[in-house]
Every structure is written in structure tokens, then in C-alpha cells.
Length: 79
Image (cartoon, rainbow, N blue to C red; front, side):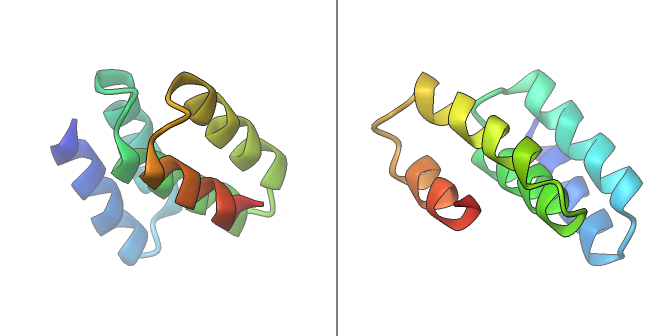
């Protein structure tokens, strides 16, 4: 899954949002706890002015793992 997350970051840097989203979502399918993939897809949501989707993703992750400091930092950025 981390390979897909890294691929998503590469596509994101190349401004290919569609390919980046596909890579991040594939990474999350393989590992739903991937902070890199969640952060990447959340950043894409925010860039596309879809804050509601970003909040839903982060809220679900925080609910599943409320003590994860990385998730809490991501939630702070989203809100």
C-alpha cells in the first residue's frame, strides 16, 4: 500500500489529480490505516473545494483510532 501512496504523492506533485486520487484510494483499500494515503486524498479533497469529503474521511479515521497523534494532526489541518 505504501508504494501506491508514494505513487499518489508523485502524481500529486505532477499535478495529475485523477491519477493521484486513484493511487491514494488504492493504497487505502490495501491499508485503511495509511496516514500517507489518507493525507494525500484529503489534500486532494481540499484542493477541489470538497471540505465535507475531507472531514468525513478524517472523522472516520479518528473514530477508528482516536489516540493516533498523526490522525489528530491531520484532523486539525482539515478543520
